[in-house]
Image (tube, rainbow over all chains, first blue to last red; front, side, top):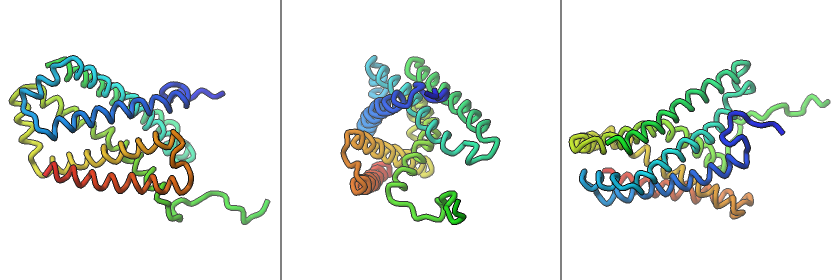
Length: 120
Length: 124
């Protein structure tokens, strides 16, 4: 069996499951945030909401889910289009470069998210 | 080997079925949301930084261009979430037939359009 070295869990079945679990977490989080924003919230209420531990933990879950979800999703996209078949001989270099940039951005998202949630 | 054997499919010359459009849009919205996350994290950062930051964010988001950006991100989130739910429904073996796939794609697109219009109404 060939092990895909740039996939998330080194196995298609694992990535499949992680993609669905992280997707459900993200959906729950965005519905929660949308419900709060739509009902209208002032600074004091917003600040108090994000002062609660469970909201911070839920938010961190969402940020970590986003990193995993985006990695798996973008892996599917770049392994379809940034290939030698589509891009010629530079395909593999392009794909690995793109994945390095994606990894860096997702890492920044995670660190930034933690800073926002526990920094203020 | 027969010379007339088709070597490759030229996808650009074919009319794509609705299921293909639903799938491509799911991908495109995913890539878009990955980029849009900068905007959302920036907004969350501003909103929690201080009372002044919160007020400044409210002011910024009331501008016409910012509202358009917010609406685009909402549209992306709505479509991507619905198409994702469709995937999970299909994982349970529901709507896996040819007709089921077409119907599922139609339901996702119609619901996304309705919810996106609703989101637009809430933003403006």
